[in-house]
Length: 142
Length: 142
DNA sequence: GCATTACGGACTAATTCGGTCCCTTTTTAA
DNA sequence: TTAAAAAGGGACCGAATTAGTCCGTAATGC
Figure 1 (spheres, each protein chain N blue to C red):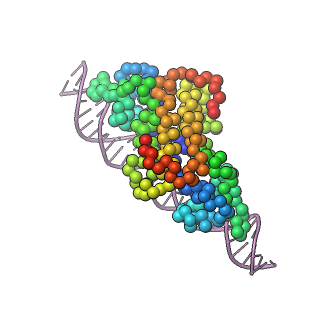
Figure 2: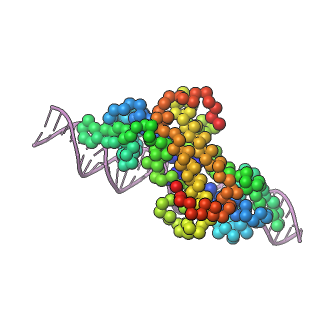
């Protein structure tokens, strides 16, 4: 179906929530307010912290807050934080894996072209956009 | 990792091969020439035929050929043929599935925006582009 | 010191994906 | 008329991912 996986979907939900309420809140609070199960929130927050999209405060009274301004976090950033580098085919990855014949493969250049286009498309929408309510109200979906 | 699945990757390989040799060839021949296992070629051809990307000729001497000009088949078409509609999240799909609250969900409009951008990016590259050899030689991969 | 909270990783269940195989239908040709 | 060649449709299983849970550890505030 060519879709992002559910963890990434959740991650966006959590980040949107954090973009709206800009305070440090515990995973438990965030779980309660978004409806995402606590263990899942924890897991996602770990990876988002690793990438710097959110900052964490440990200890009692600690929690998570957004690491950067919502305007400079793109959908591409969010996807990459959870799923790793955006690479439509294995031959576009950094580590060349199985392909091996990169420099000779006639398709390689084309795939990187497609990949760049997709990455660009994903970078056009920011977290700030996602957090705004209903800006495209009434606009048909395609 | 946000990638197309292997079947789609194969499908592109097969379509590129067909775009180069524009004759009707059996699945067996195509399998032999591309190195993709025969049962897999058959399976992929079935789905590509269903979408009209290739035309089939049944019976002895039959086989498959490209259904349209390579210039008017886009990467988006190829992905959709194998993986179904391009929908990054379940709430963007035709059948609304689990979400249900589409008209109220504040994220729905944003996801369709992202989705449209990605679909557009995938539509910028055609099968003709993919079949051309090494047009971007030397251009850094981004 | 104790309660609270993040951190890191291991682990299991569930789902999806890749691949194979079967039988049926259509067509050509001997 | 029969046999061979080929696509069509679907069932099926094993493998690989993914989702989700749980554990112990480390840090911090009261």
